[in-house]
View 1 (cartoon, rainbow, N blue to C red):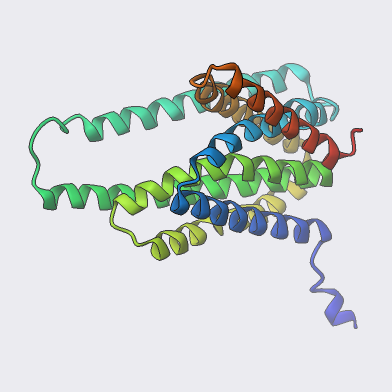
View 2 (view 1 turned 90 degrees about the vertical axis):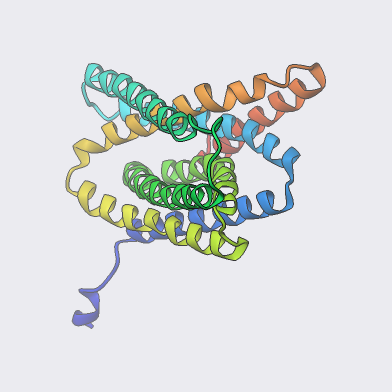
Length: 265
């Protein structure tokens, strides 16, 4: 009896393991269904829902949780500013690399070289995706350590953001010569990096609770930046009233879903 008790897993760690694993499998599977069946309308609607979930998770739950922790507000605002600038620079770096990769497209290239470059891009996507998922795992761990409800909505926000992003990844992988099965399996393996990040995040932050508010603020800066800089501009391309009304409705649905999960009625 005493021997078995030594190997008990912390309930919060179990929640983190489940949340990271489910988030990975759900986002990859949904993205595969959407990209393989080309349900473009569903993807457009997912973007609107994602905006509501991500903004409400960060502005109504994660940031208040961080600022109510007793941590110096100025340092948290500095972290928020730093996070927004960091995500801007990361996106800028990705855009510059993408344009550099395609700057010679006007010239004639050999098909073998093009295929090699496409294949290389596919593997780069997988490596980048694995690193991104690892970070998501740490964020989910920090959220669960702060508040189990916050952990749930953070996982929800990550799923909402990951589905449109993973659809783009699937398209790149298919273009790089991956079969649908290989693209799905490799993406699924990369998604498990979230579980690794979640476990490491739990053990790193469990005894360093003073860092949790900063992780929450940094995560919030990412959600806010992605929603305002990437997702909302996509929605603005469809400016007719017929398309705007469903967008507003789906943003509201995202907010209501987060409020429901966190118990704010």
